[in-house]
Length: 125
Image 1 (cartoon, helix red, strand yellow):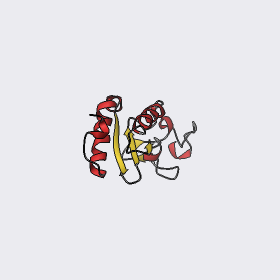
Image 2 (cartoon, rainbow, N blue to C red):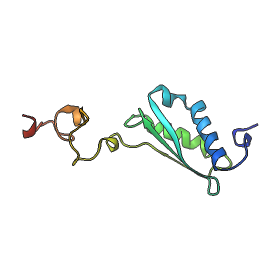
Image 3 (cartoon, one colour):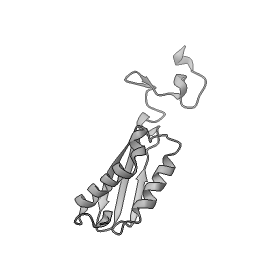
Image 4 (cartoon, one colour):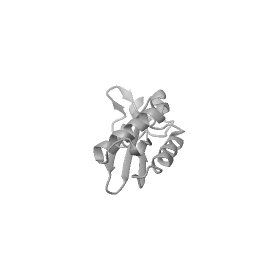
């Protein structure tokens, strides 16, 4: 029995199967401190949206991981579109207008000042 024949159709069943596949076939995600979540499944259109997080944010090989996920899932008979999102590491830290420290965690580059700057600025003297 193939993965797509394993269970009845429907959003819940497809979502569960994709989640199980991710856990079974992509253990590297969790092994490297990453997370995966099936965010959207539409069995009528065949669209699946997966989001990677944790250690995947800012990882230099996350594009390889997303490509592998997309290449495999698009082969499933009931899936016509696969989107794998990996939020940019800066997305969870806020934008340039946000305070430099959130709950004691300095989010500036190297802890030295504003984004991308090696000059700590007046407020740090």
